[in-house]
Every structure is written in structure tokens, then in C-alpha cells.
Image (tube, rainbow, N blue to C red; front, side, top):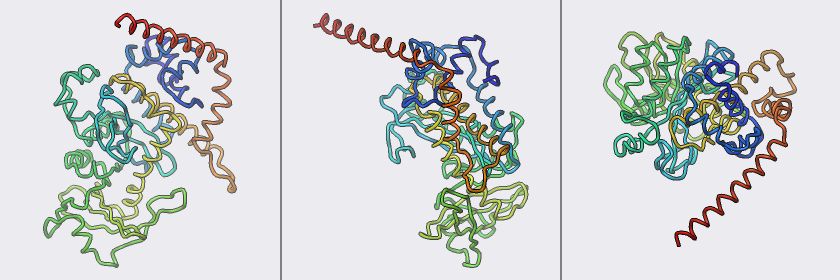
Length: 412
């Protein structure tokens, strides 16, 4: 918290921000402003809601501090930036950016809110360092009044999901950091502007593309699946993309050189499932020629962002932001990212300083959170404060119901 303390002009906001970072790390069953305020001893959630809506502090500056904190402690020369989107299922139509759209969280089309995140991934650790909200066309074009009410501004323009990813990738080196590679799925690989922007900066990428994606070779332009059928059997190599919970993930890999327009080397990377034969395709670029094993390693790092989403939502309540406006969303998500980053940093430092014996598995973020709850959080907050707050809340709800029934009787 000392890293971000200077971002708050008032001590009250700084103290509430500390509570809003500690709250998601607690063992509360639900982690919104109401429950966190009661857990922290506040009599009402007004202070937490004021911090997210009206208090003067810049969430983007705190976001930059989170990135600095992660890179400082998790720095690795083989780090990969991973761009991916995640959805949060919502009810109603007033939450900023919400509409019926496909979300991987539910696995189907749902009324949801989608955000694009950028994760800093190394072979042993990872954490989110940036975020951008995806604002659908139904908000920016069809109903600009909704943007104004949600705090987006009158001049908010529609941007596809790769465009926020391009802005985040640009911010990373502008902050003085460096990552040689970026990985992403088909949403990003199919966008030529994003690929061109990365090539201009000399950043290597391994981005997924669809089977219908067209690739220009020295002979002609072909679909990716057409090129895959031309690969001879001897060109396939068995390599591990990543070590998962059940060991190495082995696939068959093949690589095809595409048209070379200097500087840089460009390939189409093909992955084949050894059991089902299913194929996946990736567009690759590197400022200098690299071996196939390097491209496979970068492609495999993309799965770590899914683990980061699961960990961030499960441990730091990344998806429990019950807010409607854009400012509240960005502030709440940024503080949740800071909470999760703190677990990842503690885990990394513990592994480096005290390696686990061979017969024991290394400490995980879940175990570190349980230790943190026992040793720090439970001693920092008096349960009597929570009891007093819940008594106030019950009285408040009773008064609200009584007033509601009186209004109904008066109208009748």
C-alpha cells in the first residue's frame, strides 16, 4: 500500500483503499462494498462507495503502480505479455458496457460485461498488469446517452477488442518496461492493425488465427487450413507447450515460412492435438529468426492468463464489482488487480528465498491467502465492529421496508 499511498490526496481515501484491497483477500463469502464495509468495521457502505465514485484519485496511476510492482518482483527475460478478454455475467442494462454477448465465463451468449486484460507471464509466475473495458457498439453508436450517464463521455468511440489490447501493449514499453513477446487468441491474431503496430515496435508475437485466415506465401495466398494439408509428415515435431496440473502438454507442431518483408521473420505455426487431430493456427513474427521451441513456448504461455483470471476472481474478487459507472469499474478492478498481484509477488518471493523440499509442492496463492487471513487480517479487524455494522444494517433495512409500505399506502 505504501507504493500507491501518494495517489490519494486525503488520508480517509487512502485508508478506505487499504480496506478495499484487504477485503477481497479475506474469507468473506461475497466481496462487494456492503460486505467489505461491514467486515472492516464501517457502519455504512457510503465511504466505500464514495471512494469508487467521487473521491479524487487517478485509477490509471494506480494501474501503472501495479504494473511496476509486478515487473519489479516477477521480472524475467523470457516474460511474455498475454492479452485476453474475460466476461462477467450481469443483470439489467445500466452497468457500463453491458449487453447480450458471448462470454467465455458462461460459455454462451449472456447479458454480460467484457473487459480486456494484459498479463505479465513468466515460466513460473504471472499477474495482470493492465485492463481496458470493452464498450460495445450498442453503447457508443446506438445510445450515446447511456455513455454519458455511465461516465464514458460524449466522444467515446467504438473500438474492437484488439484496439484496447494495442493501447495496453503500447503503454507497457512507454512505462520503461520490456517484454520481447506477446501472445493472444484469434480475436487479436486476426486484426492486421494490431500485428502491424507490434511489428513497428519490434515486438515479437504468437497470435492465434482462424482456419479461414489467409496467409501470403512465396507462391500465392492460401487459407491456413489449406497450408496445413500441405505439410509433410516429417515436418511435424512433438513438443511440450506448457507444464500443466497433469504434467507436460504435448502436441505436434509444424511451422511454415510466409512472405518475408524485411525486417523480421514471419511464420504460420500449426498445432495438432495428438489424440483428436484437431488443428490450431498462429501467426508469428520475430525481429530475428528464432527456433521452433521458442515459438511453442510463447504459444503455451497464453494459457497462463486463464489461470490468472481464475485466481484473480477466486482470491481477489476480480468479478464482484457491483458498480455501474465507468470510473467505479476502473477503480474497483484496479484495486482487485493490486490485491491479486500482492499474492503473486509474495508467492514468487517465497519460492526464491525458501524453495520447497522435493517431497512437498511449492506454496500456491491459495495457501498464501489462507496464511495471510490467519496471521494478518483476523488480527487487524475486531469482530465486534462487524457485529455492530450488521445490527445497523438490519435496522436500516427495516426502516426502508417500512417507508416503502407507507409510500404504497399513501399512493393507494
